[in-house]
Length: 267
Image 1 (tube, rainbow, N blue to C red):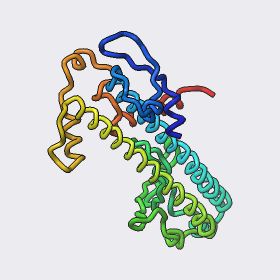
Image 2 (image 1 turned 180 degrees about the vertical axis):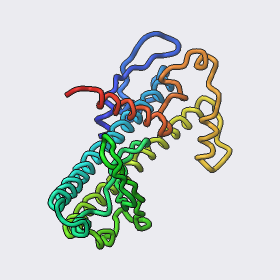
Image 3 (image 1 turned 30 degrees about the vertical axis):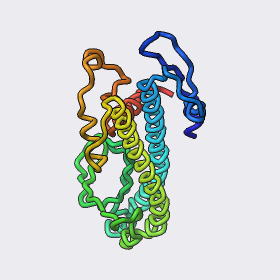
Image 4 (image 1 turned 60 degrees about the vertical axis):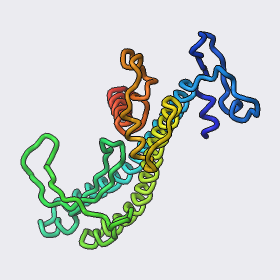
């Protein structure tokens, strides 16, 4: 995938000494046993490497949307079954009706970090005060066992028969989706770190110095705070180091724009 990706981005390099443009195949240059051309532009190589990382971060982040879609499908199954149980017991005495109603609810949502939350919550109180969107439900988050992607089936033990049968099946699917979400998050964080390391390497070339610390993260933090030259300060561009992908903040901005566009666009 990486090799295929490298051919998707326009390949151009501009020499500082000349306005002449030349096409460079990065892989071919790396495999060539001859010395590199004297006019290879280090800034352009760094920019293109960061561009590839940025493209991968966007693609990986969008995988969270598939996870959200699958989790929503499970949430809809639970909601449909819950509403059906309520409709069947509507005319029964209150005691019988309570036995067939769920005392927990499933919450699925996209967080501001563009990760998918899939949690079960214990219903503490339902306000029946008239509201346009229906009764307000107050619930309490049920904690998952430490270092586990799945809830214990015990959370369904005191529930209605329909939920005792359906709940564990839904939760088994959600546990797989949580593992997927954790992998996606880990890949994205690794790409952020790769972006910082890419900047660190080229910053060393610019500064012609070696790190003084064995702690690469501390060293990278120092580098990220390094001043850019006056020309960059006067005319910042999307290619400047301060605007390259290195933390989740830029990713959050992309995903927020993507969500807004999706919600506002018509089919």
